[in-house]
Length: 138
Image (cartoon, rainbow, N blue to C red):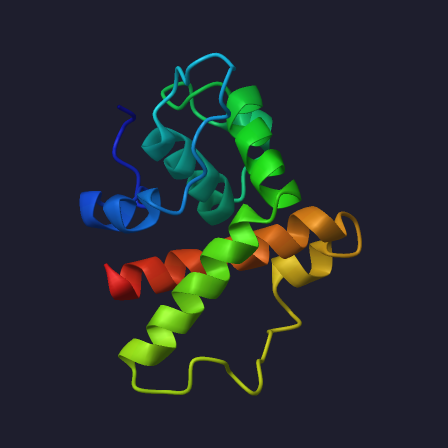
């Protein structure tokens, strides 16, 4: 278990997200890392703005964390989680499940970085929204 960081998921928040994390692929090696620690490391990168290689040593290896982040970006896991949480948040607030408009702050670092790495920056924007919704729902 890693040191307590402000970006870490609470037990309730992790339980809320855990059902949406893909199962390990059949026939491969069993997972050797805890998914909660991988998610905490990903949220640490998001919140603290560090590079992957700058992850503190009490998280899983940065290569492992980045591989999960990248694979989930490629297979659409982050988008699925985001869309599910958005729908649940809106229903909880007694609003229509699908929003008609969205506003993004153009001064945000995430938006400015979009020009350099569009896929990664877009995923971090989804992650930021996922983090907000999980805190609200869990």
